[in-house]
Each structure stands twice: as structure tokens, then as C-alpha cells.
Length: 232
Image 1 (spheres, rainbow, N blue to C red):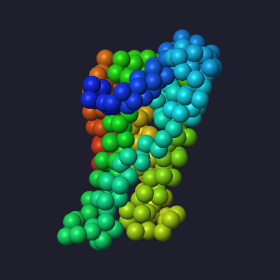
Image 2: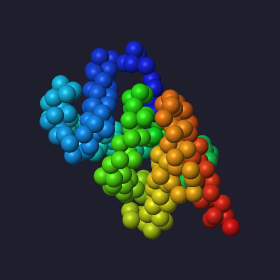
Image 3: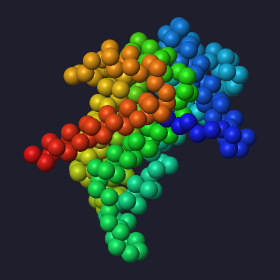
Image 4: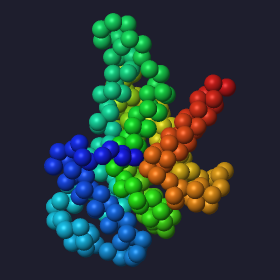
């Protein structure tokens, strides 16, 4: 999760981050206090002091505000680096650069997307509460993950020099999406085969850096398990 200081940012970017953080924090507080259906977008906007139009510049739904899931494609800032690490770029670029293995490139991409999330650093406990109490949030997260899966499949096809809709690209994106969701479930204490209560309790006092490190470790672990499976 992004912990960069705001002192080095320009006024416009600083205001954007402050508005994003305020909307997300208030959405989680209202959800914890009233439930997801206990407040409207208008009430959230009034609490933050922004217009409904401003809200939709940041989020597509109320659920997305609670999750901190921006309307913008989270893969976009890292897409070119992902493409540049592949065999198509290596074949067409200067010199004899070796492509990064697809598994490693996908893992790095997902870690980068997670690290770029601007989750306010003081709301980990509240986030845990609302995630456990509101099934609609997990449903929305899954819907968003499916869209990201389609976007990732398109990137994989381009990186590997495959036609759009290629079954390999679709399968690779589906596997990465499943591994990502499995890691999130363990991260939030929902996963099978782990002590959910212990996972959730240990996360309450985490700093954003600790949370990022824990999620990265979980994600790396499940990617490594998947690699072992396909090597047998």
C-alpha cells in the first residue's frame, strides 16, 4: 500500500489523494456503523464535502469506495513494463535482452498493483470488520477481479505474441486471478486451510508496509505452489 509522503506532491495531486482517502475512510466508517445499505452516496459526499459528480470521478459504486477500488484501470500504469518484459519486446527491441518468465512477470505486476493502492494507513481494523460483515463487498471484489482477469488476458496475449482470445492467455489470466483471490482470502482470514481468526487478529495492528509484505509473501507462496504443480 502506498505510503509515499505527500510533501513532494503538487497541490492538485495532494488534493486528489486527500479526497480519495476521505471518501474511502468515511465509506468504511459509515459501513461499520450502519451497514452497507445504511447510507447513500449523497450522505457520504455530504460527510466528505464533495459533490456526487466528484464521487464518480473516483469510484463507480459505493462498494468500490469501501474497497478503495478506483474507477481507473489499476493495471494501466504497469502495463507497458509488463509488455516490455516479454518475448515480443525482446525480439523486436535492441540488443539481446532476455524476456522475464511469464510467471515472474505476472507476480511482479500483481504486487505492483497492490502496492499502488492508496489505502489510508489507519483503517486496517475497520477494513477487516466491514469485509467480514458485508458479503456484498466480497461479491464486488470478485466482479472487479473478473474484469481485471479479462484485461490481464489481453495483456498476456500481447506480451506473448498471441492472438486476442487465445486459450493460453485466457487460462494464464484465470490462474493468476484465482491465485490472487486465494491470497486475498487468506490475507483477510477467509481462506480454507488456515486459521482465519489468527490471520484476522494478526492483521489488526499491521502498518501498511507490513500488510504489503504479508500479502506479497502469501501471493508468492501460492504462485510457487502453482509452479510446483505444473512441474510434476
